[in-house]
Image 1 (cartoon, rainbow over the protein chains, first blue to last red):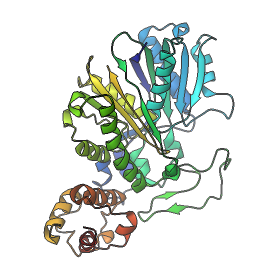
Image 2 (cartoon, rainbow over the protein chains, first blue to last red; image 1 turned 90 degrees about the vertical axis):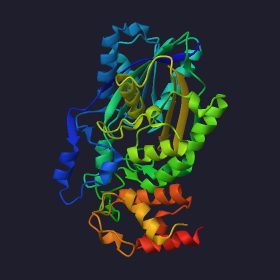
Image 3 (cartoon, each protein chain N blue to C red; image 1 turned 45 degrees about the vertical axis):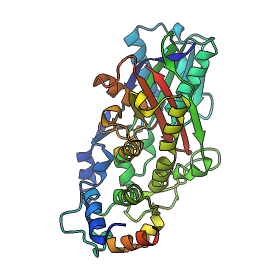
Image 4 (cartoon, helix red, strand yellow; image 1 turned 180 degrees about the vertical axis):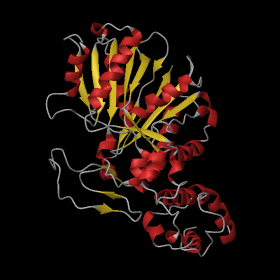
Length: 334
Length: 77
């Protein structure tokens, strides 16, 4: 039986870092350039705020909103790059904190900007297996903790958040088959080198890496090759969208709404224009959150629903793309 | 390929954060205080979307003025 998105909820760190805060910290920067990214403010996690804690809050809110019996959840997926420990899974810890039944599986999935599509695909596959009717997909990003304090461009762009999405069987509509992809040659385009198996721990003597604009990073922090990411996006996403829609035996004009990952409003506008998607069918939702990685698509869905742009019965294309490089797309009959 | 004058006019519409008259065909744009990483992206995107010509970051680093960039595009037609 197909599955669909039934509900979503969100959680954010306590602190808001506005653009005024940013220019107060970097007064020498000229205004007007970074504003093209579309970001006006972003939530930033403090040292004691972890992805799993934010995900827990989002999950509790969703369960309370729906008065959901924890024992009715058949599987928990925690999708994030921020895991509590090397072992055990963070999903298992969240399973316990949320009071789920022991027969519910719990699994960590690690993926970046395309992560929501990967999570939905796994959830849909579990649902279609017939044994799992209700899956809770949690995403969380606290990437701002890994951005160097003097990496001005990325500090302006990224924000933190968590989401909780309920995926359930449906007798009407639901997800079409997913189309996913990977290009590992782009591994270093969005890169945090130190802190995992190959380069364990943090290097206190890591030298500064300074670009021509004075942005500073190190091997302990996020390194993003903006041009490489731009080239990947423009090369991959338009072809992906056109190919997928054609595979579904549809045309672009048959799609009511396009909800993409929100990396940068300027970049997404280039995509919209290249695909010739009318403005009213394309969701922009970055100004209040920044690039929230795996959380950007559910946030954009929420924004679209709240503004009346997303309505029941619509055909919605969801498309995630980014680190890896990786990508995923699906059609949701909402 | 557009003339240098028209190329400059079109590109200035995209680079709207530069004060009027500050950016001309022979201005060394990297020396302008407004110059930022977003402008690199905007210029490369403009060359691709307007003229279908791929310009890399390395290409751009080899150009100091819009005239240099226009000359580069002329060789790539």
